[in-house]
Amino acid sequence: MIDTSIFQGKKAAYYTLGCKLNFSETSTFGGLLRDMGVRTAEKGEQADICLINTCSVTEVADHKCRQAIHRMVRNHPDAFIVVTGCYAQLEAERVSRIEGVDLVLGSDEKSQLIQFLSDAWVRKESEAVAGSSLHEYHSQAKTKDITSFAPSCSRGNRTRYFLKVQDGCNYFCTYSTIPFARGFSRNPSIASLVKQAEKAVADGGKEIVLTGVNIGDFGQTTGESFLDLVKALDQVEGIKRYRISSLEPNLLTDELIAYCATSRAFMPHFHIPLQSGSDEVLKLMHRRYDTSLFAHKIDLIKRYMPEAFIGVDVMVGTRGELPAYFEACYDFLNSLDVTQLHVFPYSERPGTAALKIPYVVADKEKKTRSKRLLELSDEKTHAFYQKHIGQQAEVLFERAPRGRAMHGFTRNYIRVELPPALAREEYDNQLLLVRLGEFNHDKSALRAEMI
Image 1 (cartoon, rainbow, N blue to C red):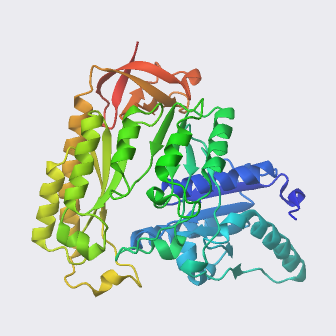
Image 2 (image 1 turned 30 degrees about the vertical axis):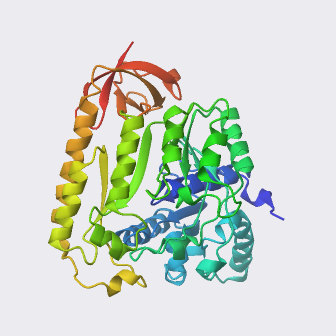
Image 3 (image 1 turned 135 degrees about the vertical axis):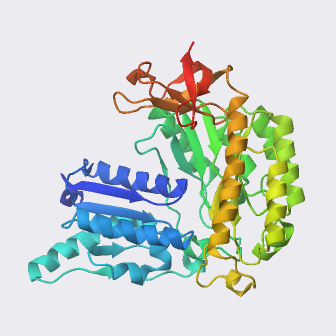
């Protein structure tokens, strides 16, 4: 039983690293605390509770997590510091040794975060009276023991909702620690997710992003399929737009592509992890597809939805990526009708099978390869935006600070900017028809011209 009175009037600060799934979970934790009387600390205010939701996809991410924890401890010296997320799961003991951290929760404890926080809060107050201090963490569960599912459908301070439909991963790619950090694939029922979407409608939501670790693997727990989920969510009245955050190419079925092309609310917007455009490297990574299958999926999307935005994840400098393999990757990506590349330099992860692969790419070479792919990405994104200038489009706008430009996205994920002179508070969370003008000052968006 949680005594909510102990949190009444308290202030909390949150920091999220990593993916949309982490953002969704942090927003949900914040909502639960808000329901218990905890308000979010304003900028410059001292918080009573600090929650850091961590990522561990690369060594750089680990470093950023440690920096974020130290910063929170420094900025809120008297706060109760809670660390959760992937880094907390993989390096629980190391995190617990950071001065100022009070509670470390791994992936299996995350679903009971409020209960753990409440219990630890009471113990800390008791320890303070006794003149000692609380400093604890919960042991790392093995992959097979991470079985809980923490539901999440929230928007935090954004307009779009993020609905967690799945967690964990059964794919043991040679470079990845995700199965160890998140556990095996699991999911709630379609019926429960539909109810969460309906709740978002009741709260004024118009757009939902489906998030998870490997969402195309939906159904491992319930025997349902991702296509079944998509069809059910498409029937929820009031939600105008759905976006699928990331979908493995071997799980992006032809039937799903065809359905999205004619659906009521699923947008012509796909995010598909490729990781490498070299079949040799894909084999080294233990990916479950080849470039031929990937190219087929891109061609099919463009055949059904010519204006679709397609984002692609690419990892450069992995072990075994010989110069010729990278050139093959570059040429393959150059040949594809995709919109944007999300480029990540490979980072060595302790305990992964990739460490056994010979041929290590030097850091300098990784940077060179990343730069080439980022330049290719800029060319493709610019060309995609360019061909839409002058067209009419419906944009879902998000609020902005007074005197600042508002931003939003078209159905096919073109970022649109509404100048401060035209921005209105009442445009927040509204779908408005605009004409797409020229690029803004930094070419990150197209300017909106009101119709």
